[in-house]
Amino acid sequence: MTDNLIITIGRECGSGGLVIGKRLAEKLGIKAYDKELLLLAAEASGMSREILEHHDEKPTNSFLYSLVTDNYSTGYNGTGFFDMPITQRAFLAQFDTIKKLADSESCVIIGRCADYALADYPHVVRIFITGNESDKISYTSEYYQIPDLNKARDYMIKTDKKRTSYYNYYTNQKWGQASTYDLCLNSSVLGFDGTVDAILAYLDVYRKQKGLA
Image 1 (spheres, rainbow, N blue to C red):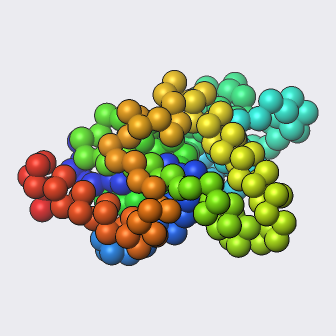
Image 2 (image 1 turned 180 degrees about the vertical axis):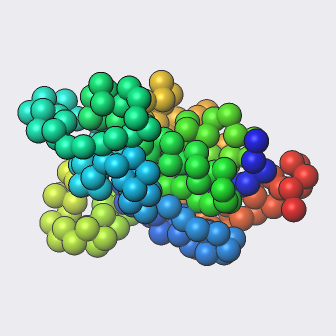
């Protein structure tokens, strides 16, 4: 089993989890993986990136979409994969990519049930980023270029519902519940850079406790 240190980040929409994850990775001198996972999973599985993007962190019940996309070639490992629903194939493609990354390097992985995928790995720090509603709405409006704050709030709520449904369905754990994670932080209190600093402080203690360099 690898001694690589993996930091997984779950995040509420508008909390800045992606920005925090990338800044954290930069400070640590390692890579951060978000959408990059989709390209790697597509290359490894033979699935198209478009299909993986469609199912990214959102389970779908669309029978018509599954019927159409099931006509695409996947060729994943050659056994059994063709018989699975498209949503499950997309999840497993990312699941295996996450494991391969953890085997090969220390890194930051944002979302995509990475904490669950790496449950058996010895050095995984599971972090969840939340924020105050007004701050999250403001950031969602700015980041996704949604000037109407009411629409930004609706987008934020829908995004978190999708993430909740996806995570709870595939992991049998509760997305955003403190007991699921090692460290939960409110980016509204500390700011993005302050949240990064808090994680770095936690990692210093973690390394000492685990005897890591």
